[in-house]
Picture 1: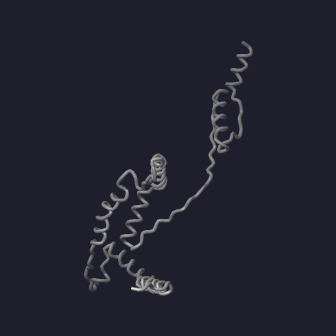
Picture 2: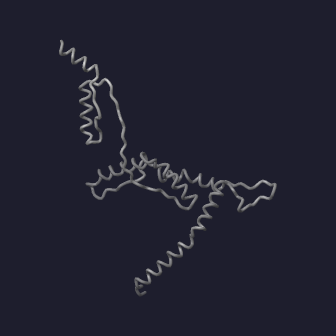
Picture 3: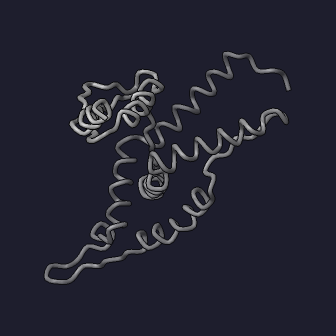
Length: 191
């Protein structure tokens, strides 16, 4: 078979892409999602309309199926200690790969509520045909104020040393010697 020219391959791929996008048009997808939500909530009016004065059919099969699948799917994606694992390229990378694995798992699961993120993502995918997770990086500074009472000079010196080692992340706004330190200093001078 002869080689296809690049222009024909591009045209064929563009046509396939257009067909795929047309098959899932926004209006049709929105209607399917609305129907799926109705079925999940047990509303069968579209398929089984009720006669006036009669009760209507309710079926929770869709909800039962989705809720029945969720534990198994969550076990697959979040059932172990490691949601993500970095593989070392060579023997010198083993420690770094383990540290990366531990860090990313901590950030995702602990700092960002990874279990609930995965749960919502998977449930949305089952119910709405699309599970979407938005990811972003945010840096912010938080300011807090701490007040210490009745510190000895040694305790204050240790605190000041911690502040100095914090690379500008902390600062001492004010320092006033307390009465106890002043009394101790006077009694030592007099004695």
